Length: 457
Image 1 (cartoon, rainbow, N blue to C red):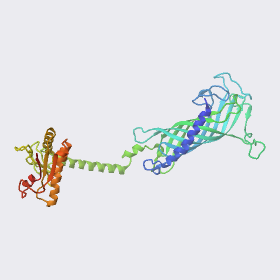
Image 2 (image 1 turned 90 degrees about the horizontal axis):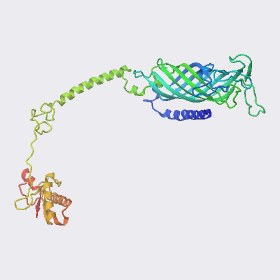
Image 3 (image 1 turned 60 degrees about the horizontal axis):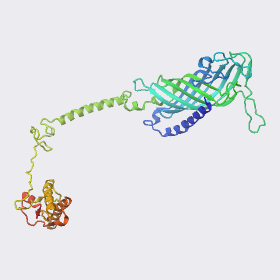
């Protein structure tokens, strides 16, 4: 296992977490902003250490070891954490304790190192790190409130340690090595190193996982496992000079959320549940009940308005003609619609086509005229013949306006025929205004007939 690669990867992940996530989290809005949550917490923890971890490895004596082939040491400390969102937080962790390993016969011959040591007890005077904590998932036990939180963390830190090597396997007997009072590199300006410190400093990378169990709105039980990769021989002179020390810790502790109890803990926040959980807020529950009553009243009103006994599509409340026979077309008041008799446009007995009718003040062709014009267009194309279109208007409006309107009506018919494939040169379109009425302009029935274009061949 290349521990250097592990440490470099962990360091890079820590920097990304600390710089990237922290920066973007400042701008992130957590369903209304972080101000409505408690984001600071402090924890105390204690547990044990062992000089190996889940990815394997060997102890300071070059022996392959398992968890039950090592001694355990005590480890304790505290944490301070700032939660930036329900997915990420930054944590400062400080610990101290002891790490123990010994030379045994369980996995091979017990071989002493160059100093004759058979056991080592390393005192960790202090270890401090900055960790990025990533929330992996939560369990809410169907309460719409998160109760268990799973997380992973990676960080970068420094530790001060001093190893003591003993001649016996039980951490007793003669001390064959003790670095206390002999650590310390040279200070800038000094010719020789100052070997007068009780502990040696080294960097380390913690990588761990854990779970938090919510005990109350303020207190949570924190259980965690952490692998620590160091950059030094933390067990003193080893049989392998290239040996890089490592150890793991199993910790249990209590985490206390700081801030007002009226605010929710962001670590255990369930943003989705917050959107629909009306049961936690009495005022919101009352508002929901009031809305339900309003909806029920509105449904009753809608049912009343939608009642339609005769099935004509008009509510009984607005139906002025109740009891209309099924299938009868009705208007907005529920009364039958009376349709005018359709004007049938056919070829006149004298060989001319019946006039093309128009609506009042309009030059737009009616769809009822399309069949007549299609027949005319086919006849003109087949016979290569010509046609004259005379446009007229009823007597409403000025003479000049009606002259223009009659020309527009004639040109509308001409344009339809041209679009149908008739040569434009074979069509003559003229407007005559109010001239040559075919019926009296004193009645609407007469004026309807005068709004026309006559077709002459």
